[in-house]
Length: 143
Image (cartoon, rainbow, N blue to C red):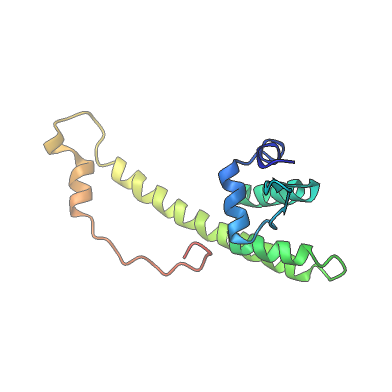
């Protein structure tokens, strides 16, 4: 198959496929006599796997690890469970951060209950007066 066909089947752009090849997530395809890339069903399966991992917000490093483990079908899946448990922890940390952000925005929003002149807007005044605290160190894969 040509790269466009693989992209259509796997629902990935040609640029994404080339990027995944460059990043080592997708093995380079064989070349035809005319030096065109020739993809097989294994490329489609791998692209779908990568796409599904990305849909779960996994990093390329996490995906690379899972692909490496997937390539060893006789090994135990403890490392896979550990990786997913860590990813769940990252998601939990992000949810907590987003809940804190929502709380801050809600408090700020309460400072301006009615339409008024911009100079009297409680939100703008609150933003100008707000003391920012140093960002806590993130312990997620987002850094």
